[in-house]
Image: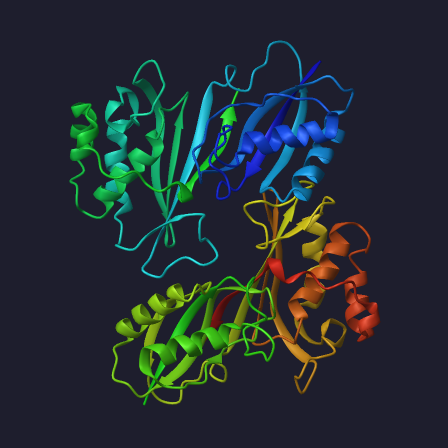
Length: 247
Length: 247
């Protein structure tokens, strides 16, 4: 039995989410079926993060345990061929044979996300489904200032989904940076781990600040309230990318 | 009668090209139909460039002449609403009322294109249809060196489509820069005007250099040959973006 770490890129659009779902396609099911078709083995894929329906990944880390003797390179090539043949929007960017007790989820000590906003009146064409189109002008400096209130160790109950399964709402946010590149506003978030919907909740509030609906100081108040009612809408999944799992 | 200059962004994937075609959808037809639905007027759209099937635009400049009294802002908003309703992958980024003899094609004194290559073994997911996936490692420095042989005023017969309607194969290429950003190799081209298929022909040859199939010096030889037989394959349209028209 060999444990292979895979780095996956995927377009979240066609999937109900990363995790296997009863009622629709998932990244997990597609990868497990590709592994079965290559090896004849029924495996369970473990991932560093559990992204929601429509959320993308530039570099999700997962692992699978395989009996069949295969080099990492052959496995990667065979999985990419099968995924492509099946019309899946998933690619294996890297495949590495792991030793010891390495685990895609439990060994992961850091997660990085990027949220892309295209800030213009015109609807999206080339970036349709790949970013959030916010039409009102955003003040990215106010957004960045407000974001800093969230950095550090806090009770993030305000920014937590009611479906969140984490034991505790206490998390340490290492970084929440907002910058503009032309008509794009990019929000980079890094933490050891996040609560369910935390990034999209935070982005939703930052956009309220950027539009001038919220004062900068209201972000700290929302955090302190520890109450979902203090929250704006979640940002849509289209703009969210899982960028890196750190080990 | 008012002449409006429109800046268009479009995903070239669904279209047979920018120009109206007998046998399939075009950007021109979609925009002209949107104008008709807003104004009741039958117009002819003129564009700075005539991009091929599958070629994208980040900022194509076009014009239309309209009788109906409309502000530029109202026209832009109405066109975007109609284009969206019709399911077109076209957006109007800017709309400006022009005076004098300004003409989207004849007043244009410079065109800029960008060609995107994703240089990796894994197939594309998020960038499918939006870049050329070249699997063999590319030496972007050799490509850039070879590209410099094409900069300047030359007879570009080697890099010209047999369908090219230009009077002369003489063109002045102002810039052809190759750079790498991670696994992307980006090729930026600028000239007053280009021959039909010129950018895709040049990129096809640059990739042969990048893969080591061609020596750097062979680019100058291919140019001097003035013969299509000296050419590699054209690069696919997926990676090509019309970036800017200069006036």
